[in-house]
Length: 146
Image (cartoon, rainbow, N blue to C red; front, top):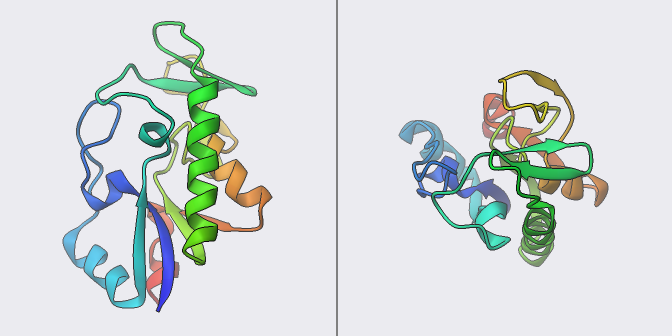
């Protein structure tokens, strides 16, 4: 059975910045489990950030939270942990939370905390892609279930 790196919040872990989760529909999660061994990761928590925490957004190479604090180092550390887990467990690819400053793939918030989206990747998604892993957002999950 192949392994799939997956955002822990999508599995129902309450590690979202607000303290909640972004849990997937139970049937879809069950369908993933029939095909993959799920390897959960929250790069933000793995990088040492607390839950709950101030929301953060990418601003170029930096990540800053709404309080103006630079949390780039924590995001980098979490990205390294995600890459380590993907390699350690031989993950086929990753299913990550869309628009996240760590997990977003292809589109993230612009760093102004205004809700504006721009092309780009979160820190962990960028790290995984650079290492050759495919990264999917939850809206693309059907591609992984087929």
